[in-house]
Image 1: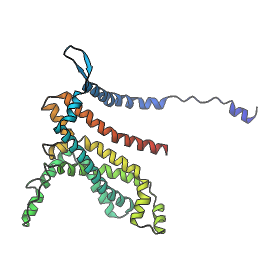
Image 2: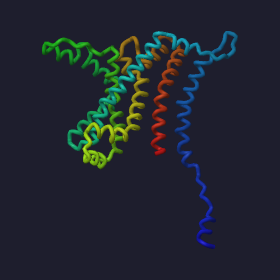
Image 3: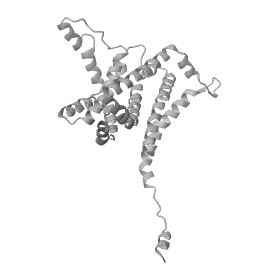
Length: 290
């Protein structure tokens, strides 16, 4: 028997499904704790019982939501806050990540520590600090008054209050994701671009940004998902009306005692969040395919 015949006669090795068993528990937990509650919520909002005791499909709760001016103003407030926070996070965190990636000085260590610090501060503590510093008669007002300058209009209890708090709260995760993406930008590529005369803007636009586009998309997706469903910071720092969807759902459920309406608001919120979740899934699938 030749060597080729021996190789051809080798029976294929049967792969045992150990990998599937390892992921079975988390998949079942996700299906039980995430997917099933979503399906149940959708069913509760579209299925109603008639006075005769018969079940029927009804979209009355969604019709009310999208025809109610107050509900739409709260949704618009949430979308505005989310969009502004996403832009500000990118403007603030990208320069920080670039500096941390290409700087080898001792100052970079302290900058990284300051950038990560908000991750260890609970939202309720952040809210209290915000009120004490930027609230009426806070530290900023006292300092301005001590040098004879007029008071500033406090962002506390205005739409800009949650924006400032949410941006500060999401800086650590955004910086870490961008910094991870910048790890794929080699120093050799940067030096080669500089050798042929590329300036700072050209280097950023043609070398760095194309390689971290997926990281930027992932960072913005995570930030948007967290901001859109935020509760503590908008509840404490934001105005009473209009309000973001998180406080709106809580007030509808606990104060107005309308659980079905609150579930409808949650489903609408999930519908917007799933769009950004699909961007994240697409980015991960693209990276694996590459």
